[in-house]
Length: 224
Ligand SMILES: [Zn+2]
Image 1 (cartoon, rainbow, N blue to C red):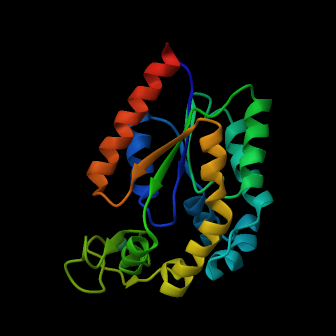
Image 2: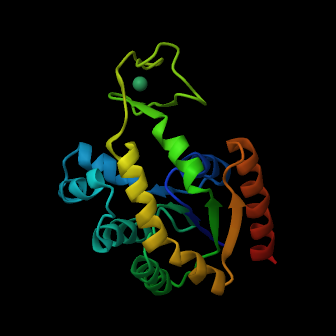
Image 3: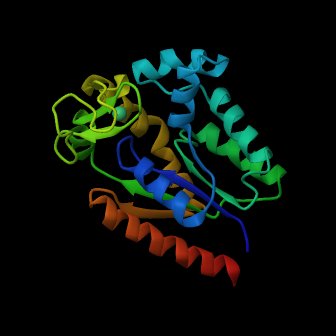
């Protein structure tokens, strides 16, 4: 079996996390969501976490070298030898170039980039309704997945809050950053023949099915 090296691309809040977790289960490949990795590092107050926190709270992008270091470490560890799913990286052209260089060093290359696309308006609606619990990272949505009791986590009874980077002004700023720094990757990967666009405003099940179909096509092509 050839390795399956995938990137999930798309604006913040387009559902990459949900789809990444599903893909991880389907494909049994490591899923590297840099947002989760960084939030974990912030919680544990590691060096990387302390460096990253200020940027994240403002909705700014964490510097390239911090993220490149994290991902290069995972790729060298051996755990991603059969493939990987990247979410949140690369997020800038320099990061994409660094990833390319690293994969080349390892004698590998990208299989495909999956763009989960969504309008700014749909994203602002989705993210401003999101609530997370302070203890368990359980995620709710006021419209799509409300808790049984307002403001309280169904699972562990802890308080539900708006994550700093989901606050509306921060979301708007994240979208600006996306259009300025991440959207150029769409053209870059299109030119390389790697880009596959999926409509992200559909329900998670419909989006998931589109991705599953795409990935099975890729696996067949890679195997032939
Ligand atoms: Zn909870």
